[in-house]
Image (cartoon, rainbow, N blue to C red; front, top):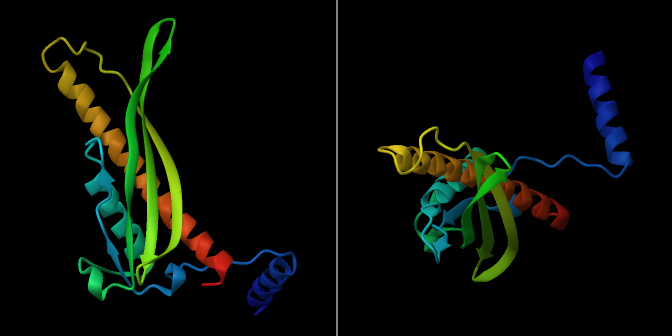
Length: 173
């Protein structure tokens, strides 16, 4: 009983300080969401990964996912603003590469935009030990870049979920 009293006291104290717990329930009271693959102006191949990761994040919150926009409470869609790869260099040469993804996400309910946010996600990958000009070198580098893009999509999906939850909590939805 003492443990329960301590927990209750801690929750009351946090609430009195202006803090409140954000629940893991679906944001904005959503039950069914259509996650639409994000538009890519320059094909980077991240749209499908991002849609899958968003579906996983929302599904973990108890949201039912649907491909039918008409039966959904809301539609989560967006735009891949950019997906770039940059070398990180030193006087000794290329230390690593970084992928940088900028995503604009929107949540629409009944044809009305209720939330919008721009997210930037990054991930690094090492240069290959063999130059791209040697057999297999370019493939190793491309495979590493694809894995880094996938990890960036995971990060972007988590950030979208977190921002949705915080925005809904701020609005009391």
